[in-house]
Amino acid sequence: MTRTAFFISDGTGITAESLGRSLLAQFENVDIRMITKPYIDSIEKATNLVEVINGTAVHDGDKPIIIDTIVDETIRNVIREAEGFKIDIFSTFLKPLEQELDTHSSYTVGRTHSIGQDEVYMDRIHSVHFALDNDDGARTHQYDKADVILVGVSRCGKTPTSLYLALQFGIRAANYPLTEDDLDEDGTLKLPRALTPHRHKLFGLTIDPRRLAAIRHERRPNSRYSSMDQCVQEVGQAEGIYRQLHIPFIDTTRFSVEEISTRMIAEMGLTRRFSPR
Image (cartoon, rainbow, N blue to C red; front, side, top):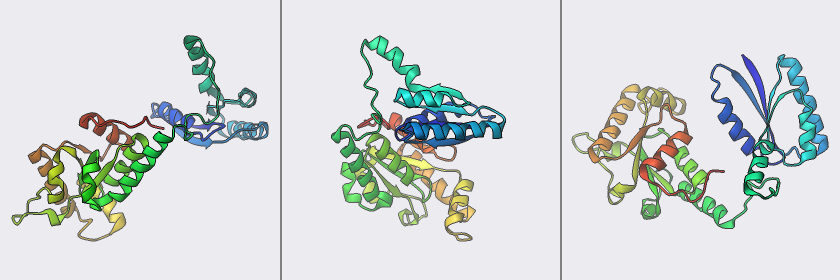
């Protein structure tokens, strides 16, 4: 079964898309084509979009799913005329909240994702800069300022996780790659000297060697770096050091960056400087 879903907003569309994707992800047997339409902030844009939605309904043979966060009631009324199954997030939730809180909503477009509080915005910027500056073991002298230090073999997901932690939660995350340079004379992996003073901040990432080999093959095909033997060896050594030193770790093979990050925050007891956007 294939259906089309429209995420519509008179702002960025981030809220509609995030909630819509979360809801639709529960229906694994349905193939859903997702279309985000931000900044539908005029009658003309809304009217044109309704034509697109109605055309999609004819093409698909099924009503599209419409999830919107339109604040302007006039524009929202235009969208209501579309041939689709409509989920109006604001009218569904704001009215009951107004009754419970005994006050009216401000109905402000873009309220969720505007800069708003400068302090929160600057925290996000500083955290992203920190993640970029401390990517791949670049500046180990700044580790005293890190909230968490991700460790793992090359291409196991350290960089995207560090950036996600920074952007979504304001967490200052550094990451350090475990490489052959960190091997003892007997060939066993040891904790790099730069990480020793910060063991309490370390969180390990691991990955299925087959998946790792596939990822590395895209970068350096037919190389020792991407060979199965090399991947098995590196992953085994990394997991060995995690267990030996009681470093918490997670397998990134089947988890999204969102799941990896939230599990890490819970396990490490990290403090979020702000909530996700």
